[in-house]
Length: 401
Image (cartoon, rainbow, N blue to C red; front, side, top):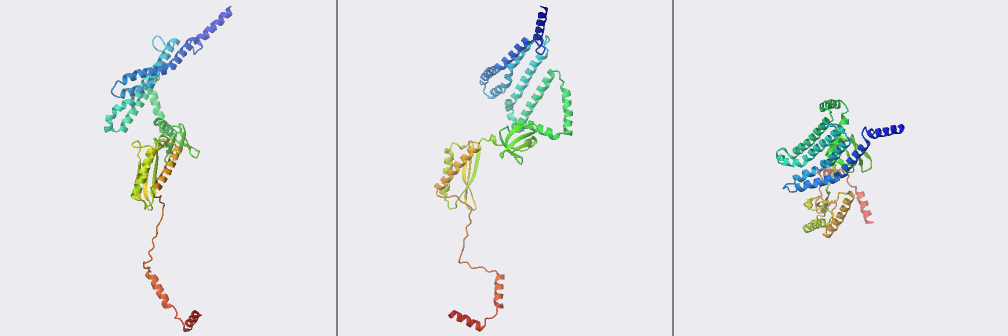
């Protein structure tokens, strides 16, 4: 009987202390509460956001709605904070004086929510600085907003460290020494690391997008790593580009084009009349306007004009944009346009021009003989031997025969 009592005592001891020193039942209930908080946070966020938007829409400006939408992320933390606080009370991680690791976790989540909200609110509130754009310029105002967001992140991180009793001053001093070490060595490594962070922060490109870096590479981005970025060229060969090249140089992101351009110079024969030129331009614009695959003004420019008089043709300039940016679909639309242009030009009664040269001969013109050639010919005639009589008689007899 004593053995069973001892066993039961061991079971109770394990039940009360085996979950990281906590009661297993209370810990399970706390985890259930936290799980429930994560499960209902989407519904709670929707209800709170809807309530705030209903009041924000009563305002005459759109600023209130933008602020509410910017706060949607921090609002999602509210159910989690409540759930964690209830779980801390159930498990007993709080202390009578209001301290303890559980309370610090709740305070940390509250600090994160507050500074997250301040960070997100900077963007909509920065529109209030629009009057300063005339004096400071839009770029400087944008940099001020970015500086405020970075400042909130740094202050929020310092506040979290202070909550857990970690002094911030030694960390700042350590960062200074770390900067000296970076200055002495490993510059390229940290340069590429910082450049990679800048690329990710600015969102210049994402995996799967088509980019072109002047003099470096052109292809599809596959991976953005800490030191380098993997770009797959169109010949399927991989190129590992250091992030510093992608941060310091101009990057063209073709995947973010809104439209794709077609720019052609079409040459017709010089015998084309003015009426035929007008017909070609008008019919081309009419065809483009009726085709759903091509964009129209004022969204994009559209032009079909007589541009110049070339060496062998009258040149027409065609500028248009397709609605699609997919390469294969763009090629199909170019082909359709090429067929239509050929039909329009032939329907106008003219033809496309090609490089040619015309040579004009005048038979009535006097042949110019250079003076040197003429004097040389005269000298040869004067130096020739006189013809003998018997030679002349022989030539006459041959002619009689």
